[in-house]
Image (cartoon, each protein chain N blue to C red):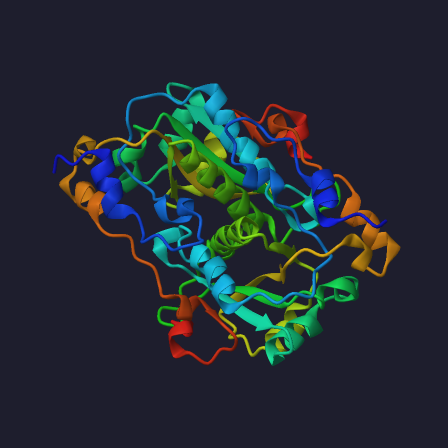
Length: 207
Length: 207
């Protein structure tokens, strides 16, 4: 399993389609990270992209907690991960926790779009990362309770995903053969007909 | 107020930053639509981008209801909009309602990331649209109850936003002077320091 990064990416990239930005087909979520750090200037660019996402009433509810290697925040985010993610994600030079203002501290009013908008801003972030030659892997597998407690996240913020960010490493860097296998497995998606339609008349849409 | 489309976009585009994809700074959400229809081939591309968004456990919970001009689905989505959106959004040749599988019909298990992932896929969709020279404007301003009832959306699907999609029109096409004013107002975002930080130590983050 001594495939190089370009060889893995060749396996992972979805077929290009004329007129669709290659970025959408090329971005994927590796688990193998290189040791190389992400410079503050490169890191600022991914958040600059997130800044310009649209949000309901332009509330911009997203707040990203950023932990760079050897920082207390990196350790705390790592600590909250489930074991299956701890196995590889600690090697990422940057661990980010996405949070979103779900209840206004001023009015007590809930924002039903808090997580929706965080999902949007995080997409801007990860697509921009891909365009810089970085890779990002989002995880839902972490303890909200541990993260909230260790990072002292206010109650009125909802938690999104943990994002491992850095430069892609060779699959062989993954110690566990099962992870290497997943690193090389083809990416799969539902066909267009199951995700876009004019009426609820296709049974497959309901599954 | 007889500004052309390029003149409006010049007002709306955020300052370009070296190394950040221009797409993130250039995309915005106009209300003025041109009469021109979006061809099926162009429409397929925006959903092709959405298809490749990442999702929790690769569940791909997004389902997009697509209404093209003069179709029953276009009318039904339009009918669900609040009056302030009805004033302009009916001119868009395509109205889309984003929904997401929030409770599995097989296991009854809720997916806490249903709306987060829909927000992500919709970002892929709208960014791809921008790259094709289309514009998209998402709205939270619609009646979930009306949309659910008219479009017969199953209970276990959560609703995201209505997306008006089409080619950009000149601001003068908007009948209401208040809408013209909003069409020309500068886009504003919080500074980076308020959305990305290593600890909850900046009071501005909490607002």
